[in-house]
Image 1 (cartoon, rainbow, N blue to C red):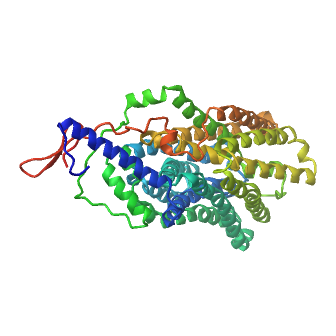
Image 2: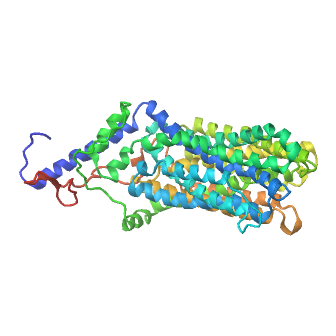
Image 3: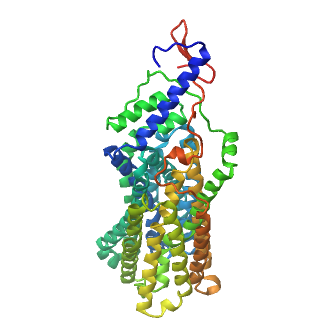
Length: 548
């Protein structure tokens, strides 16, 4: 409105507000309608490498735990409590990281926190690989690894809300689901790569395992765990240099002018440039606070969405991690390819080889295809139908596995049927709720609470993972009996509850993030403090503004 004349200062403030409010909506519309570009590819790759690393580090322990048992306990497991401690340390840390980084990303910025979580993962991974147990020591190898895996879990937890929110806030509306799905699908490749690396390492060390047994196996688990930091190191630079999302700059930093420039830069595939001397004019917009958080989520239309995302993730992770952390135990219990004498040198090699290749079969047979089937349909069929369908199929599959478990141990054909059902469970977890529980919380909340709400939802999932691991550990040999079948029946019950929690969720496909926030976007900016220049040349804004 250059050149316009105003009858009063208040009329000018209103005009500026209208102009910037329209500019905000126009900039967001450009992001939502943007053509698929190299920047979108880069965002997916930078975020996806983190999830690849997360999955590798999380699920490699299922194989490494068998190695640790052979080295330090002369068995295929370290024992119930030690095995539980090593496997549950990561989800406990992840829960902490999801809540902490989710809150910090809304408080101080996505860009400022992005990369910090990878640094934590890198340090903790090296720490695990270098863990040792000397003679007559107060701290065992189990205790050292538990501490490092907790720290690693904090870093992994930070990756969930940060990667989800950054991807969703940069994505065009029509491809947002596929972009987020492509990021999350890297979990499947991380799981697969952990099994492949384990197989390669075991085969490479075969002569040494056959000649020296546990001493050679000690090398294998260290290599398996330690190599997990390689992709994190590669991705670190790119995470530290990714720009702040325009939505954060607009709605939380309240700097519409800077965000508009940022949008123009990334749509033109220009390198991100920050001008420290640029004039900052902070607008008046809804701000995050305890009172505002309570006011927003106390409305049932908003609160039910957070309840739905949190419980759905909780229910899903009970089965997903209950199986994922214990795939080796389940395969061993069913007698699928287990060596008859696993503690002999020959038996060690055969057991480790079978466990590693068995995990490759599970990843290729179910995990990876499930992610990419979801990728194909998530933006056309929708998130809610995928999640509902996935929970329904998982209920049926776990019922079949649970009630038929003991019968499937009787013959090789029956064992093969069990493994096929196991693969189908992995497939429908990822072609359904494991993918959608990650996507929906990254879309369904306003910018000022998007990362916090995603962190709360994800942390609820890790609570389910912790309960599943504790329950699996304590119940698998309840009163000397094989209870794995009953555990699978319990998983079926939680999958059924997930069907009902999905009813609380909105369908988010082909809707903008602002539409999904349940907040009126017309007049979202309600006031712009007037700008004046002092005698000393300082630029000052009025009420609600800041000196720049």
